[in-house]
Image (cartoon, rainbow, N blue to C red; front, side, top):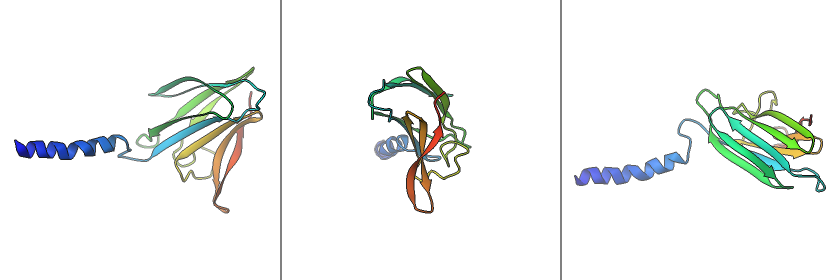
Length: 144
């Protein structure tokens, strides 16, 4: 009986620590930042995946919304968002590739963070420049 209690106590902290980590891959975090002009209205958006609906959100200027998740086995995780700013809107995938955040950007995502900024001229994604070893904001999409 004492041996069973000992093993239970030994295993319990291990299980709690595993719950915070991704046992079969990496943990990714997606950030959405409102970088719209100060005289503009709020940024509204709705993000979801096949399994998780993150709901509707409104961001004030310079406010950030983020969420973290474990990448699905065989790299099948996809998160998409629909954004609204006044009369403009745009919907697109904000994560569909563990190596580049979104397929087609070409540069690797070393830190497992996908950082998006909504600006007056569109959406920017943070990318890594391997030559200078610095991060920069890449103009990804324009508003519709």
